[in-house]
Image: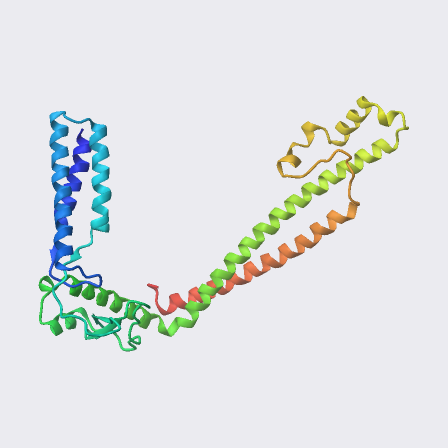
Length: 315
């Protein structure tokens, strides 16, 4: 019962945590919509409380309480997805624009407000990227003439965005002298990953070709054994089975080939002896070239990393 109580208590807490604030968001609500939503959330709270009481009194089963709790949670998630706060729209003057353009205010990296407008079709475009460094969070607070505790939710988000923007800007400035080396190392690491994957694939193919060669050699041996028999002997079942076992083509001896997906066949017709060997030779040559590329790429990466480390040991 304790776990069900916790579920219901969490739902009750979730509904209490939703705060209606006087701040306009991108998706505004009218006064009526906000009031309606507030009533719906309050109703979930009351139902959760009632379910909790009924469960304590034994009027409903744990199964029924769980079912109701899940239902309340689903409804609550619709109203409060990821527990974000819902802005309650303030009355605004009617829009006289015939194209129904709506505008919003944003902050740029200098902490200045700018306007973006949206006609409801394509998403609004941001202003050109600022080439100048973002202002510090202290300067942002000074511009607004507020301390952090007095910021609105939107201004707090902007405060943290500027903080992260400054961290990224400082990081880029630190790395600028070795930017080309960093990019070269990253490209080398991507190339290395490709070469390693290629090496593994070629090696797997070689192992499969070696199995094919071994199976083919056994078929050649079987063919040679059968060739030395007369026509009558070639038809006798016990002689055929004996030669298959001698050549290593019986069921017990061919398990590894079947496991590798190689077909044994009934006629045991082998390929020419040199065909598979030539394939293996070409594969080994490709493997050697790939391994040389891996060694060379690792060397380039190591030299790049050494240069980066000598410039800044903390990178």
